[in-house]
Length: 393
Image 1: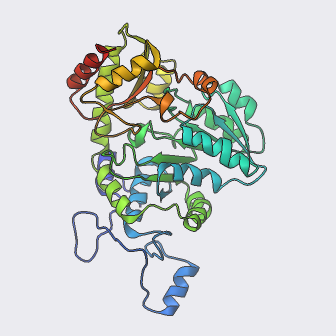
Image 2 (image 1 turned 45 degrees about the vertical axis):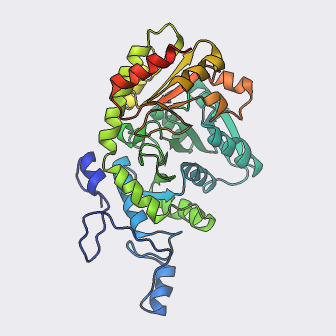
């Protein structure tokens, strides 16, 4: 049961289960199976497991359940299901609810693997998918029709940081009877109010901010109890996409500092973006917290923060971008994000490499685009590192 606690308290205590030993730290129940007192008890549990009864780690585990209850509490969903990765969460949320002939409308600005699921996996099995410009409400209105089963979008797109109007798209979807599925990883659970704004299902790659230290892959799907337990759980437990107990323990420990980390990272991101905004070595700086961002007003209304990521386009294209990245000292080159360490990514050659050039251009993924995930280092040190690297272009 979710208590009337503030978010930081929930992040430390919600969902805790203690054994007879009264341990302070969350226990790792590192077991794949569970013993029964009798054959009758085993039969009863398989017929209907109780709220704190477990059968097999692929179905659920006490440590994993702690994590699910904690994330549901802070996100505002009735329940959650923890998955092996962020992409397992996206795949599980969509495939579990869809059948051949169903119609999905999605924003076209997505992470490469999300696009693969929509363009390749769902279409291969007979699901009709319509892509729209996620920032254009008229395109949503035209594409979402009676009978549309679901809409899907990233609340902040990867990597060009377009911000989607959750409340307005949800109104359009619900009017047609469609479920709203939001990939909320860039918004983070700290700045998200997606459920209150109309989202039915929220997915996260917990690999990112929730872990926050680059240790483990994970994901989670949040939604109503009916959706999680009657739609998602049967699909996930039979196809093997569940989170391991050890990973759940890592995520629980990451959540303790999640609020502190995300707010510190967002503060640094805003400071860095403000410094870069006037740099003539860049053709553009993209940060939802800047007044120049097309959805700046929406961002502040929807999240109350510009978030922890920014992007900028270096004049001189790929060659200049690579020289810049290779000159960085503190900032690491990687394709991850949400880490305590600041990370620079070149989307055109990594996360979105498989996309055709015309599609990259349409999404704003230019040869000079760098995505910066801001970490917990001193912001002045990060600015100095960026300026030093700019000097090497």
